[in-house]
Length: 304
Image (cartoon, rainbow, N blue to C red; front, side):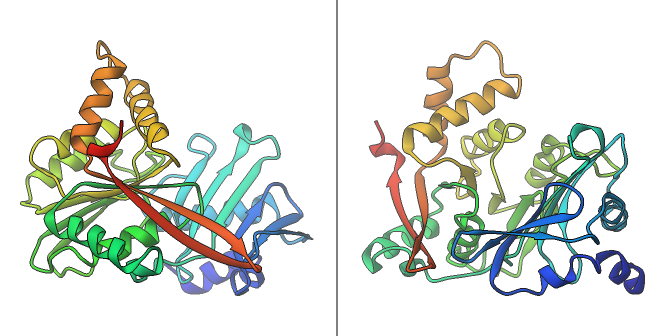
């Protein structure tokens, strides 16, 4: 990437990207920006430099660099901003009423002690599950730190194991030296048009001890469950959900939306419970204007 050209394209966002007191940058239309602060409040600013053309040029530049397509026929982009390494989602053109939507998460992948989320005794128990090769699903709402917690747990996988990761945006920090990271375009905009099933086929042929998937959604739910139920346990992944019942209801819904036919919800529920050993639930609170994160976990065998 020509750094001078990129710096020119990114210049309208630089004042916001450099701020250390915000966690999210959102553009809903030309001429304005919304900033989520550390305290969970939203700050609104007018900015004439924010135009659809400025967003289009920047996004096209990033997409080209990452081997993806971005144009009116493929009007979305998911990735990371070069240099700053922040996650970005862009939607443009006719499917957005204003013509533009941008969301940037100002947080880099991190690793924290597990006992900073829970008691030391609970943390030791959860870490033992990781070492034993239990399949763990981390659940929480958006912005609650699911990826950070996954990164933190992954440090407790034995260092002599071979790790393969599949994620749509590079966020996982795998400490084990024997690793193969795969990037799956979230919006299928990569030039090769690779699907999750392609990546699963790659993974099972390259001798992994663990396969970690960044996030479970409609496209990969059944693949994740099949892996865990066919001798590839020990995975750690994330999902947007907040209670035990909702996790399994969402898994069933994802499977049905992916095109699974002729299988009852009860059978899907049982299949999911056989695949997943432990559920972790994260919670983010604002206490005294500071973000506070906590976690609890439950063994699936104890879920009714």
